[in-house]
Amino acid sequence: MGPVVRRSWAPRGHTPVLRQRGRYRINVSVIAALIVTPRRRVRAYFSLLPGASFDGEHILTFLKQLCRAVRAPIELVWDRLNAHRGQPVKGWLERNPHRIRATLLPPYAPELNPVELIWGYAKTNCLANFTPHELDELIDQTHFATQTIRADHALLESFLQHCALSFCLK
Image (cartoon, rainbow, N blue to C red; front, side, top):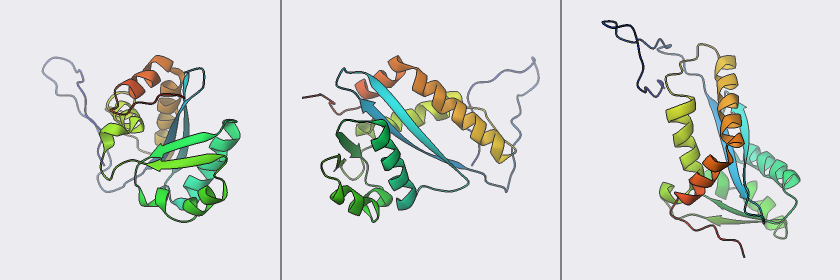
């Protein structure tokens, strides 16, 4: 996959060039959760998986880490990715209803998912015009992007405000 190309600069008369590998695809998969605390603070949690895609086992590991980080009961709202709905995640959620409860979004509704706004922001800002040549470069830049987003509380709040769902606390 090529980089998301944003406006760039070069000396007058010279076209900017982004060099990338043509046939070699390296990837880092990222999973995220936005947490709204009872005090209305928004926090983000990320997990990176270099060179692979998140499957049920990896998502389950992320959920267990999330439960260790968040001490209160968790209301999980997520899309209908097959790995979210299948085993082993479904079985673990059924065994832990007092700790975490999952609600699925409608079949195709990225506008309702604030985490989709994180991915759009990361790709068009933090990772724009970035063409790594090695997996380590991609891991470092992706980690930097997630940490930058995580540290910007106003940005995290804007993701919730601009999604079409209301995340009100009881």
